[in-house]
Amino acid sequence: MEHVTSVAAMRSKADEMRREGKRIGFVPTMGYLHEGHLDLARTLRPLCDCVVVSIFVNPSQFGPGEDLQRYPRDLERDSNLAEDAGCDLLFVPTAEEMYPAGARTWVTVEGLGAVLEGAFRPTHFRGVATVVTMLFNIVKPHMAAFGQKDAQQALIIRRMVRDLHMDVELCIVPTRREADGLAMSSRNTYLSGSERNEALAISRSLRIAREAFAAGEHRVAALRERMTEELTATGALLLDYLAFVDAETLEDVTTIDDRPVLVAIAARIGTTRLIDNTILGEQAFAQ
Ligand code: AMP
Image 1: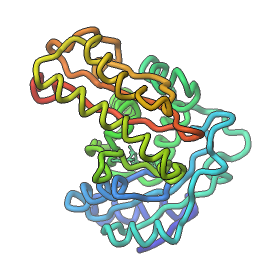
Image 2: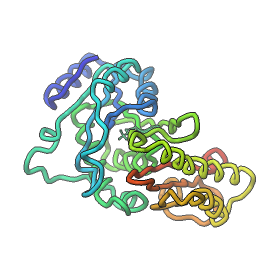
Image 3: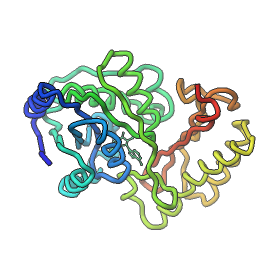
């Protein structure tokens, strides 16, 4: 598997592949790869001639006091995992080249980027939308894959691609979980043994909501109460939010009637912040 670090080299590689009529699939990541990331690559593998994975811990999507410095990094491990998953090229740019001195252009998806995660991380989605735009311009993919684990991010990228007429087809891939339900995340490495146990309340509460919904409970207040009970049982978990929102518009809902609803959680355990989500009514209200 080829490693490319400079923007110019990645660009000419992409141009060459396009000239040869090859379809480029792209998986943007911040590295410290896990099976969730690899699922994205595996989804694109049969659909593309070349699968590019980028590894870039993007400074502009971290706020002051967040975990930019301590974010886990291990390029050798990532390289082996990506190769085993069938990736063809690893793009590992530097922050200096991605953000040259004087850069002052941002991509902002209004509204969708201000709620949920955006309310707690005000500059986060601006950083995400901007870096994904840069990466699309450099890697020139035909297709790109994103995880449902970051549901709001997936929605924002989808809207950005539509609004800016970007010529990229998106694949949104289901959340990969550990056997006990914990959503895979590079940040899980921060958790101590007991914190990891406590974190399971997040996926358990989402399962409780799915089961209650399937059994006919469509009132958000009732679902919220059952979930909150589970989330607060040990007192170890600090909830940033538990939100029930329209899965397309991200507007708050009070009942789950005729459109899919995103149930999204952000919680802190010690110094680690985790997010997870599920969609209720996706099949029931499929258009
Ligand atoms: P990150 O490295 O956290 O920026 O994530 C890179 C991509 O992998 C994003 O599109 C994420 O949504 C996706 N991703 C992260 N965790 C998971 C997971 N557990 N299952 C599926 N996709 C994931």
